[in-house]
Image 1: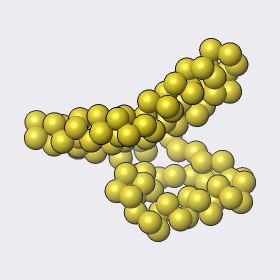
Image 2: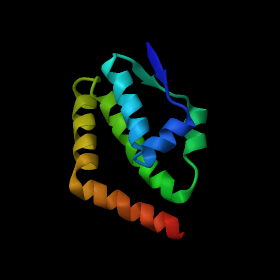
Image 3: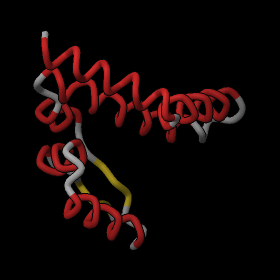
Length: 103
């Protein structure tokens, strides 16, 4: 079973919407695969400040996918997730979001 994420779902995740996060978690627990398409990502990825936050989320997703490719993808995926999930990585992306919002 697939759970198809539309632009509204991606924007909800970006805005830390609890309802959206809960529905996605419910789907994940039921064994659904999360899927979306490039046009949906492009639609949700507008606005400079949102781009920086969405870029972090997408990089984390790609890092998770890379874990499957043993051994180099696994190493790259672990490093990507380690950097992006760390407190410093979060602060760096927050600074990028703030800069993008001003420019």
